[in-house]
Length: 102
Image (cartoon, rainbow, N blue to C red; front, side, top):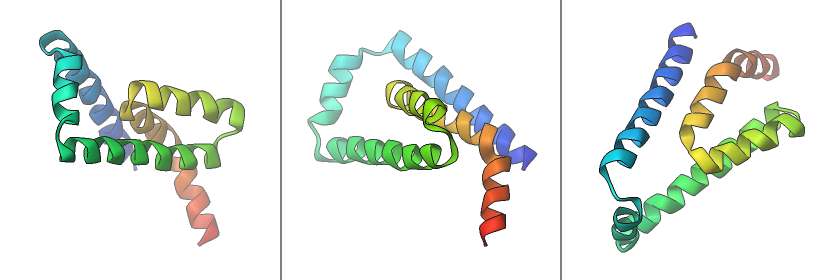
């Protein structure tokens, strides 16, 4: 489990680094418009939002609302590095709860 938690943190950090690189080298509005002009760009964005909603449900199932709601808001603002960090933090608790139910 330690490896998986480390991997999640590393992937989250790599994603943040990718966002910094893209912000420094790209032009967000022009490039985002080009993606949204394509059918698969629209589907990819819908898939992203669906993923945010799915992980939001999981976060809210494991956290009190006063903790979960700010995490979900940050997720929709900053993206999936938030879910990667949250999952790395909560993975032991989630596994314990799942094993207790099964």
